[in-house]
Length: 501
Image 1 (cartoon, rainbow, N blue to C red):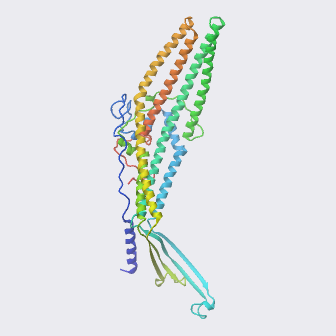
Image 2 (cartoon, helix red, strand yellow):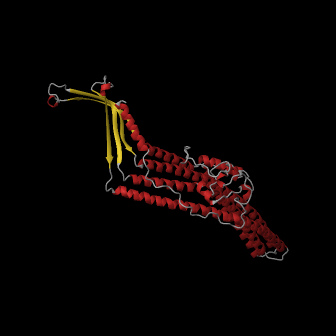
Image 3 (cartoon, rainbow, N blue to C red):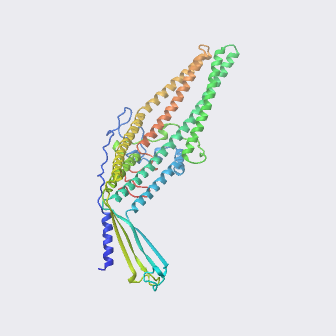
């Protein structure tokens, strides 16, 4: 075997050995689940894993229920499509994934030799008194060099670069999960803004009807006052109620405009598309039921929890890199090429040259290395606490939404019954006023009570609708556009398609 082949074989062996070096990172173990094994049991929830109503697909967890199937309003589906294409926050999240992937590529490239090709030439004229061969030596010295160089390739025997690369890789995964969180939150926020706009429109119609009723009452009292039947107190009460309704109408117009602006910002366009009359403003007709599942499924399907665990894995790898910094750093610098004093004969067999310059640096009493390890360990403890907090927060959000699911339906039923009795009370009060049995105060009180009950019914209906959306998002729903088939645990990929390892 020639000397050149021996050198190449030795160099390749060193590189392979460097890449297969040991890792000083601690063995990763997922922290124990700090939340309960089951969600709280609330009376009023149906048995099983779904909320009230029929689930429109065979999915087992909310994360597999596509938002096209969860939301039933066609206008809302169109708005979500537009928002996913135009929202600036989502664009920023996507670009952050690309930035993290580029950073991972930079870190990964540090594990490979940096090879460069170069050439140089020089012509130097020496005075006679400093020529190496005396005055009779040639006055001009020429040299031409061309070759391949390897700059400071670190042999990663102790896994420092490997762990730095692993930490960067986990950051890519974490950033991708952050993008998923932004995506899910955007879907939920568009839905909430849309339904707030719908509620503002409904409230406007309610105030308009109330204003018409109050004007009729005022006209009736005014006629009776002109005929000497009603008192000035009755007239003032009717006029006050009419003015209150007119003021409320302006409030609802303002709320409607502000709700539209909030939706416009989320959608990311200059103007909102025309929103024609949509489906009735009722929760179970606008959104589907949500399959709840078990708390353990949140650990795999909710992106903010997965992101927190990826951050913990990155911190764990950083501890390994900090430990490896205590060991010797071995690097190689090499050159291989040709040199001659004539360009014509540069690549002759007798003109080749090579150099190999290994270097070793051994840390000794380095405060930076010691404190860097302490910093890495502290960051890992922080990541553990953040992971546990993300799990606890997710559990609480789901539990709160389930508490709402257990109570809103019965509250709405009670308010509907109250609306019927309040309407009957108003009808009776008007009859008694026309017949002269009671004063207008009884009519005014009944009208105010009916308006309050109708407003409360509308607001509670909106709250129940938003609570269902919160439950869907809290369980990780909103990432898929269309429902997926039931799966126990889906592999998570990065934006570029690299599988999680």
